[in-house]
Amino acid sequence: MRHQKLILTSLLLCYLIALFYVTLFAWNYGASLGPAGPGGRNYNVIPFRSIYRIAVFSPTIADPIRILLGNIVLFIPLGFLLPSIWPKVRRFTLVFYISFSVSLLIEVSQFLFTHRVSNVDDVILNTFGGLLGLLIFSCVYWTKKRIIYFQT
Image (cartoon, rainbow, N blue to C red):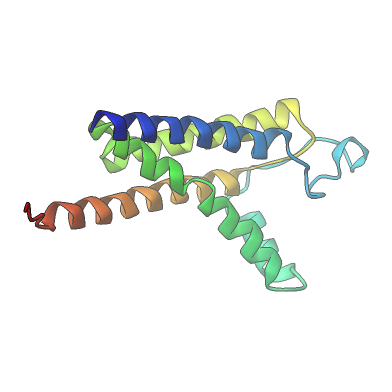
């Protein structure tokens, strides 16, 4: 049991490093065109504005899937690993606040330190992803409790 917690904690640490690398240091994919873009740093504080624009104005279905689902999937590991390691974090409100806070930290950091778009819709989608991770954890935990292990 102790080894399992060590492995999960290591996975969480690796995930957080990868999360911050992808959101703060990895190539920008042309979202705000870097310092050469119009106005450099960009932001959106109107909820669902960019989700609507991506859904309506994307030339193909690939962009909305990559951008919108990508933001959700990005935070599923956080919502899954936290309650796996710490039983006190198995509550909806705690995972909500932690996912929201981590996402907000990333978006503020993107605005202050990078030339990327800081977007309230990313916070909404990331927080939803964290909650989806908690739901997946809860299903796995519920199923695992009901499995009968036979000892031979």
